[in-house]
Image (cartoon, rainbow, N blue to C red; front, side, top):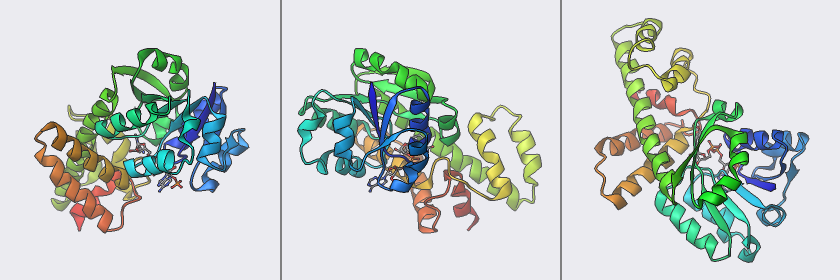
Length: 285
Ligand SMILES: NC(=O)c1ccc[n+]([C@@H]2O[C@H](COP(=O)([O-])OP(=O)(O)OC[C@H]3O[C@@H](n4cnc5c(N)ncnc54)[C@H](OP(=O)(O)O)[C@@H]3O)[C@@H](O)[C@H]2O)c1
């Protein structure tokens, strides 16, 4: 199976690297070409255009960001959409359920098959091949791609028809984004009361509220450096998608609107490309 990979960003690069390591023939495309050089050195082919990649591949995975970027890269900028005939297209980014349905319908017009397969986990789990991969779509088609998913993740869960995987993914992200903001508020509150962060973390990380997210991020707050694993920019994107989806389904999610404002403020202050734990800087201002 020839795999094409579009979007060699923070997540796409380690994911594509793991596909290559598993022995698949791989062609990559990225808007910023320099980001593909490591993969090229490891043996991946590099496409000059998305069209070239689609024509070469049996299965095309994309790890892009907003619906607008996905739509322009994969639909609007393709001159002849009939090149999608009989190809399998897999979304692995975080998108809204309604956009996933739209993509599925659009691609089916050109006799392409579609799998929705968003991931849970950040840069480090992606590097270690330990992502959680949620899949939706035709179950037989998903099964055919399980070994590709297994090259990137250690837990592959079939969630049902499209767009169930994206709905679960957004639900999980709603919680993660609130957890990060809550953790940051706790830290800011304790610091204002002259509490040493090492003592705070010793208590919190051995208590019932400890979890892998906090264990992964607490050092950022000590060093006051926030190297990106998941960006503020993607946090804003996800909160926007969550609010749009809640609007469509009628779910009442009042804290999410407030958290969205916090992350927008982080962007205004210039932290868009930093890790989403940098939200504490908004509280400290
Ligand atoms: N990071 C995480 O922890 C994490 C975890 C789970 C899911 N996700 C989801 O995975 C997806 C990718 O996340 P990421 O962290 O890898 O993001 P990222 O590092 O910002 O990468 C985004 C990718 O999209 C491309 N892109 C951005 N704007 C573009 C445009 N206008 N035209 C064409 N290509 C464009 C980028 O190309 P350039 O290199 O040229 O900018 C890059 O390849 C997102 O949906 C995110 O929500 C992220």
